[in-house]
Length: 153
Image (cartoon, rainbow, N blue to C red; front, top):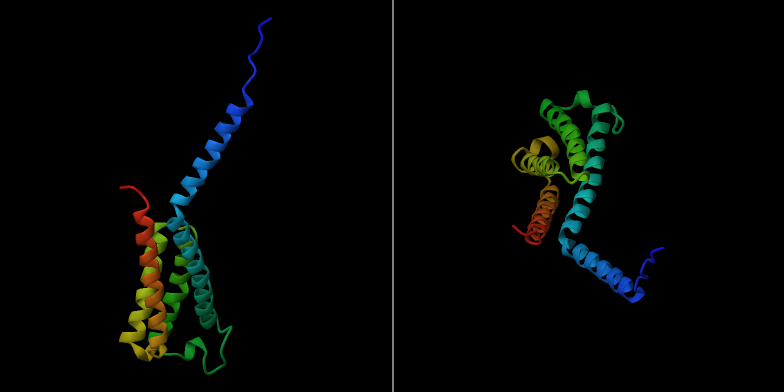
């Protein structure tokens, strides 16, 4: 009968420690990517809330008789339906951290800023909304840039 040589426990322990430490280094290499994904998930939740808010305006869930969707100007109705749809589409893409989700979300951010600045009669022309949208855009660009720097070309 052949005898199986016994394994050296100190060697096994050294190999497992090396494997654990190398996994930890790899995880730390993607810190900006993880931060970017976390930011995208936060933006997804906000996009869901914004989309549901617009849908509640369309369906009449919020507001009184004078604020009813059918009593609003055509430009307001068009913008509200546009944002009701595109915000929810962006939310799905952002949650999945897909490139198209970021593009759709960037479209919503730019669209809202343009409507607020160029067409103040639709939603009131709030500079606060434009500032918040600009801040979110700058945060996304900074995180995306940092995440891209940690990946080799």
